[in-house]
Each structure stands twice: as C-alpha cells, then as structure tokens.
Image (cartoon, rainbow, N blue to C red):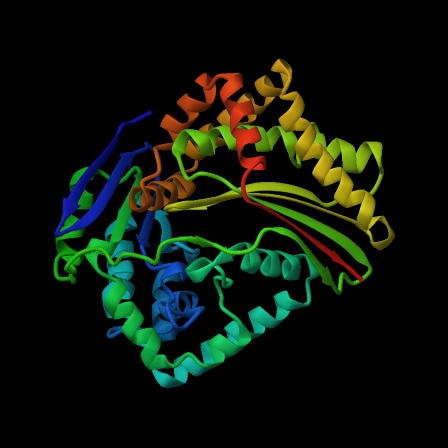
Length: 400
C-alpha cells in the first residue's frame, strides 16, 4: 500500500495517495452538511443541487457537458457533516477535472430561475420518500432521538424547503465554501507533481476563510418507546442506540453490531428470518459524525406480527449484552470488517471520499481502523455493547 501524503495548499487540506493504474479519483469535501443548516433545514442539500446549475463560466448544460467530455463519474452527496463533490477520470484528465471542480467550488451561481426549477426537483424527492413507511419511521424516530441541528432530515421538509430562497443558498455557499472548511483527496495514478501543478493553476485564488465554521453541538432528544401509525400493511421496528463518539468504542460497537445484526450469519437475521419466520427486511448500521454516533437496528414483518417482531429485536440485543459473543462469531465479524476495509483500499473512488471526509472529521485512516479491528480484545467488544444498551436508546414501532 502506497503511503498517504498530506499537505496544505493556501489553507486547503490536500490528501494524496498514489495507486498505479489508469484512473484517479477526486473527492472535494466541504464541512457544510445539514448540521450547518441553521434556520433553513435542507439548505445544505439545496446547495449541493445548485453546484450543478451553473457557474460564472458555464451554464447548466455546458457544465454537465464538460463533465461528460471528461468521461468520468461526476457527482455530489450531502450528509449531516459534509457536502462532497466527486470525480473519477483518466489520469491525463485530472487537471481538467480539478478545473471543473474549482469552477463549482468558487464560482457557482444561484440564479432565481434555476433555483426554482431545482427546488421543485427536491420537493418531489422529499414527497416520494414520504410514501415509504420505512423511510417515514426512520425520519420520525431520528427526529425524536436527536435534538437541535441533527434532528431534521438532510433534505429538509416540504415546508422548510418551500421557505428557502435563492439568496439564502447563495449566502450559504459563500460562507462555507472556503479552503479552511474543505479537504481535497486524490487517489490514483496521477503523479504528485502533476497534481501540485494543477492545484497551483486552479486552487490558488480562492477564499482561504478566517477559520473553520463551528457547527452547533450535537444534542439528544427523546428516548424510551415511540409508537407510530400508518405502516401500510406492514409492521416496522427500529432501535436507535447512542454510541460514545470515541474511535475505539465505534470500532468495538461496529464489531458487535455485525454479530447482532443483518447478515445471514448474524443473530437478528437468524431470529427474525429463520426461527420465527416473520419477515425479510433486517438491517443494522452505525452512523456517526464529529461528536455523535448512533447504532441502528431495524426489521419489518407482517402487521399482525408487530409484538413478536418487537420482542425479537429487544431480546436479541439484550441477550448479546448478557451472554456475550462466541469466539467463532467474533472471528467471522473481524474477517468481514477487514474485508470491507481492504475493499475500500482497492476502490480509489470510495477511498478518496473516505480520506477527504475523514480528514475533516478526525477519523482514522481505513488501514489504522483495520489494525484496531484485528487486535481488539473480545472483552472490549462485549463491554462496548453492554455499555451502549445501558445508555440512551429509543425503540420506534410503526404499525397500521
């Protein structure tokens, strides 16, 4: 594995890793996710959309045609912590790809007509998700569990997006899209010298910013049990568990969650699918950001099985805390997580994104996390799972 190099360019954090091959992946991440929305929930997501609606040099059509001419994958995504622009191209096109990303980063324009059109697109996206009972449960449970800046959906709500104006989005981009708030990761075959030349050419005239904009502190809201109606003929159960945002704890909980959760060899899958024959949709995930983390376990079944499904989720989680894990279970979990980290190392696109976002949020390198996974004592994994189950949890149930 080629080493990861880090340096600053006019205050912009740059991460470079040489991986031989014809392609290079670029991720430009800005610490400006939904957690920074302030009085306009959904504005970060709207800003992401407007990055593709025209700049000082390109209108919407010419910007997207220019991306297509480079032949690569050109996209963006918004989470609670970051907005990330991504591009994967041939090595010889990295300079042109960086030029296009710089155009979006520095010179995006939020015109009234393009904003109104794109706002309709986002509103349709929000309304479409409202029809999905599982999405509705997740949104309500998340908003109940968290308070403050994390409580609203990343894309906002119909009401908040309708009240957001073009000038609000323009101000948001102007404030947050600075070097001090951003990280650029490049992973692939482009030589380091060519990258530095491209940076001097395209990323030297931007706003360095006075310093990073600090997000509101994460806050929690309700806990206990939340009963909801409107399952559309199905029963859904979702359990949210607060996790201390400490690297070793996150990795320990990740291992435990793999054992408890959704894979065919995991306990909840076997309980819900095989022993009880209740349903097919089982999931387990760990979501985290700077200063917060949450483990989420969920499952669905027929509407008349709501009580049995709830009992299966609660008892599976509790039994793991009381009984611990078998050595062969933990061995399988380690292997699966190590495989995921190894896959990340091989995928230059995902790797670039992980390096950019990890740099902004203080997360370890994937290979450092893999090293911790392989060496973490079983007792530490079991203690982490017991610890979070005795803390703040919310179990949400959606039925007809």
